[in-house]
Amino acid sequence: MTQAEAFGRRVRRLALNRQGTEAQVFLEEGFLYLRSDGFARFAQGEGEETLMGFALLRGGVELRFRDGSVLRLLYRLGRLKAYFS
Image (cartoon, rainbow, N blue to C red; front, side, top):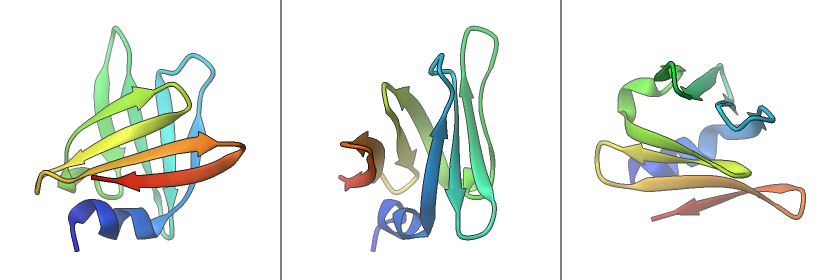
């Protein structure tokens, strides 16, 4: 099992701000806070040590893990969907 699949199983909810600069990924225990704008770019919280990078997308986030796997969390038709690669 890749790090993306393991992390994806723990995800419960995703919250995005309107500007597309902040996201919170709520997990079974705790959450991961992501921020990316002109002033700051960081990940903070549960699971940040396994991340190699992230991107805030329109309607979701893309998380890149140290083992090379990628997890995309997107809202499709009002439901949270997880895509692994």
